[in-house]
Length: 210
Image (cartoon, rainbow, N blue to C red; front, side, top):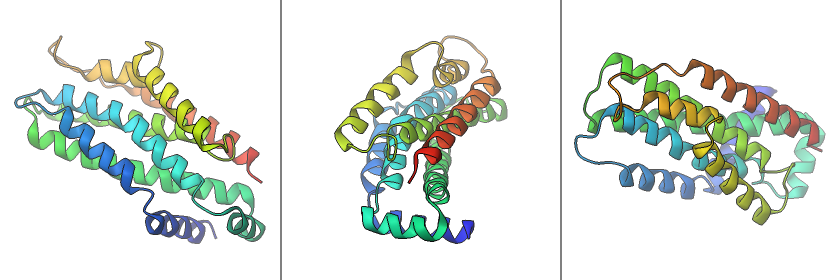
């Protein structure tokens, strides 16, 4: 039932084409942050940061794409919490695909690529995916049902995640920047914190689902 429900939600998201605007935004942001000869650590840090609003947008789309009547019917069959978790699984998977695409692109166009920098940068990108999905969960249905409020909250939280020193994303991005130091650092602690944030937001969202 869980796999079938996830496939159903994925088909609904792809069919709705609500994924297209955030994907286009992601492509534009990656292009805007590219400079010839830029170091891979810096490029992957930029990629990780840009994934936060993009994955948040996709998560809001995945959790709010169904008409209320259709969502009620599906929830009656599978359970509201299961439906909500399936939506979040689809959003997380979609974000992971975008993250992998971003890592591939940045590795191809950036300099200073080593196995260590690539591993550290890919971990930072994972932090971006987890953080963006978590924020989109907190700013989307059923926790925030009004679209305008959700968008404003997502924008504010995404900015805070980028600039606040205590943010897992901020710590991960700083760990992989090579412009000011020679070596990157594997951001395992930020990754663990981002995973906990996503787990907590998913549990809260599933509990609120009806």
